[in-house]
Amino acid sequence: MWTIEDGIERIRSRGLKITSQRIAILKLLKGRKDHPSAEKIFREMKKTYPTISFATIYSTAQILQDAGLLQILTIDEHRVFFDPNPHPHAHFRCDKCGTLEDIPLDEGLLDGIRSSSSHDIDTVQVYCYGTCRSCGEQGPTTTRPRKNTRVH
Ligand SMILES: [Zn+2]
Ligand SMILES: [Zn+2]
Image (cartoon, rainbow, N blue to C red; front, side):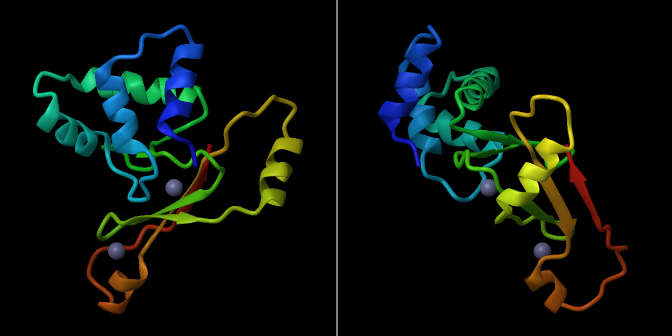
């Protein structure tokens, strides 16, 4: 897991300015395991920086993603989530309650994807959808479960 100093170093190495807002975003994201949505980070940042814009949050997240410190997850059609763990792993989202969880990814699977493509692959995102354990225990509902796995 990276440190605030790592984050500052990576931002600086890209020739970008270190602002107190960017440092605050680093601090908010560092070590988090709850996959906060961009909106949630925006709300949390607004407590300290009432004038901060959503664009600042998002552009900082993109810098961190380019620097290899953050994954921007597009697992949901309506929201993006941030994951400060850049190590490759799959994600699961419950169709009923929206819970987002990590799934370990076998390195062999990643190597298989890379070797079956002639392109130079930097990032692999694996998104899994279904019903989480606690929703499953509540029994079947009338909503039709959607099961699919998307790799992109
Ligand atoms: Zn659920
Ligand atoms: Zn994750």
